Image (cartoon, rainbow, N blue to C red):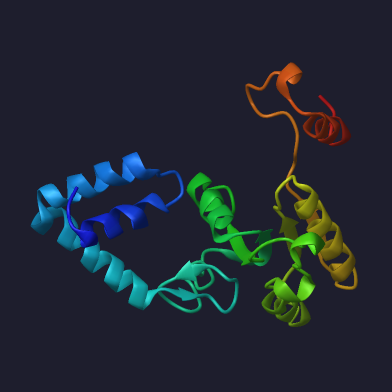
Length: 197
């Protein structure tokens, strides 16, 4: 199935999330069928992106500028900060078009078993924004996991000294979801977050 270079390419594609060896082979075969039109543009784009990508010093987003395009967008409410675990979470919220403020990417969650403590999270720039009085509300949009809940409670304690509104995303029964297939934690969150009909 080709030389060392082709096998290496298949191995690298196979390491990408959602791809296994078969999918990787199909992608590589597709690219190699017309290298000038398919492979070369991909190589150029990867090289350009690799050289241009940077982490936003304000929020932790990945972009080609620092501060990122979201942080410098004057149409966004700079006083409304949505705290997320990863850049993938930020991108998901942006795709949905549901947040008109800015973000803070923590870069993970607290996990004592994995050796991740508060010093490992990206909160310094958030605290700097709070100290400067630039924030009126923080939305905690962390995953509904033990680590996400631990991180959320730690952040709520840490941010209690600031004159800022703390809120969190709702959790519970998804649209179109049936109660009998939900786990106990989701059901408990849904009942705990109930509101008037």
